Image 1 (cartoon, rainbow, N blue to C red):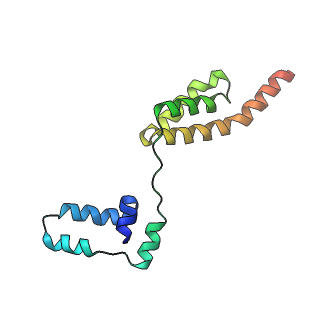
Image 2 (image 1 turned 120 degrees about the horizontal axis):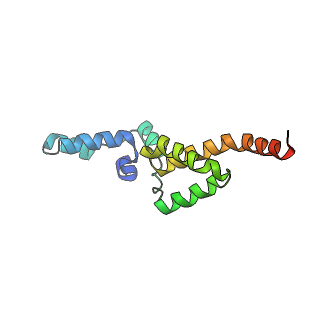
Length: 123
């Protein structure tokens, strides 16, 4: 079985060849060459490293995950941090927003805990 049959469009090199084939599909010479195309061993190794993309996050999953992450912060900070994460990553999808949100909350957690500790002690 050839690489293109096993890995389809997960492999970038195959995807480029497939796009070229689709663009030139009325050309019988190109069709014939592409039908016989097989991967060499090095190309086969490259293709096998590509994994299929996981399914995209749904709105419900995003909302649930966002609430779990934001609950680590005081209520006063949650909307501002959520807004900044959304503005930074929404064009790349929910997963990117969640990644940015986790990073931001991780950066704020320790300073907020130290601040709350200082407020409690009255220093």
